[in-house]
Image (cartoon, rainbow, N blue to C red; front, side, top):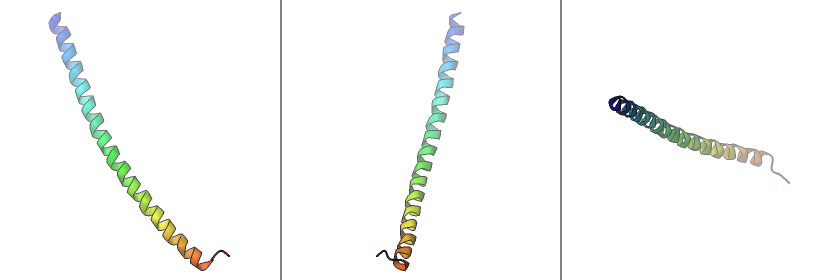
Length: 62
């Protein structure tokens, strides 16, 4: 009986460890994707202001 309990606890601990590993890996991937999205957003924002400055030159507000 004790062997069965220890085996169950061991298998459960192993499953928790594997799950924690996968969650850590996915978290790292998400952090990388978030950084890429932030860089893309900044580039798009800069491009938007760059393009909008042309419209300001073409149609200056009075």
